[in-house]
Length: 170
Ligand SMILES: [Mg+2]
Image (cartoon, rainbow, N blue to C red; front, side, top):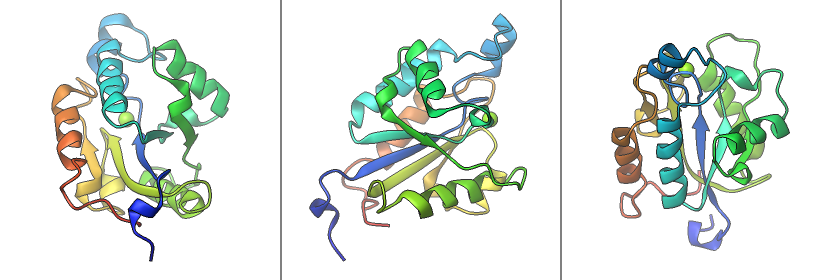
């Protein structure tokens, strides 16, 4: 098995939910905008992307259904987030509330095929169907009212710090 250092283009994947993560319920209720991101959450996501240049986004939100990758990229661009960091979305498996299975399917299909995934983080406000598939160390459970916050950012930065021993070929 090669060491991760032998894969200079290896990436970290952020599996990203929208409702309760990029669109906080506080923002939704204050503005009535159900198809927009909360600007505060966008600031946090951009900080995360800036801190980890090897991080890429794979959309796991149900918003992905019926949208093309170009439409998803445009949605991020409209909110000031680099669309080039968005590389895909998880498949829609006909098992409602089996997001963990969909994420595992994406990893099975793409890891070492399109990219080498050296680490990943699943960010969601509903995690029951994720924790049935993944260890808690790969999951960030957001507060749906606030969406992605500084606390979540600090949590991810700590977990992705270079000395924590997570980095490996999966
Ligand atoms: Mg959600």
